[in-house]
Length: 180
Image 1: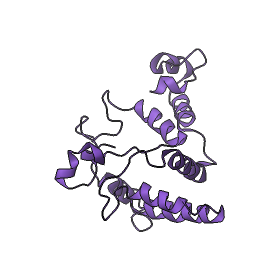
Image 2 (image 1 turned 90 degrees about the vertical axis):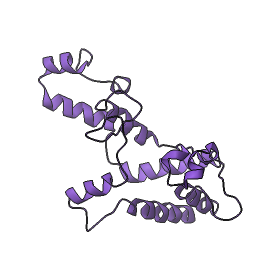
Image 3 (image 1 turned 45 degrees about the vertical axis):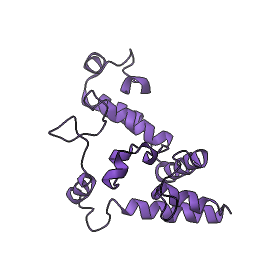
């Protein structure tokens, strides 16, 4: 994530030292690959409805929750709290006391105090393991995004049209690479 995308003071937004490497789980990458099939060509996967060259704004997920009537039960920042609680409990259960600092770094990568910049590669292997554990915790009963998209495509079009319109192979199935 580049510094200009983060909520930083203007002077820090232009400083590459504030860029952060964000590890993604395999499931998150799968979702992005599936979403790319619906995204306009360009560097962004999720864009504004009226402006395909601009990212969604910071309130978009909150608006979605309101439309889905989650307004009373959940807010976007609630995921940070749930992640912190869940993964810190897991670290305690597995006797990994060092994970607490890594989890805190993942949620707020610019520490307060004397050290004003962060090492974006700090603990990257362990951070990657933690996000993969979190994804398994959330999605262990679900099929992959690519498989779910294939199923929706199969339901939407008859087999002959599906192969022709969607670019699938002879069986009408799609590989993950075709969804990118």
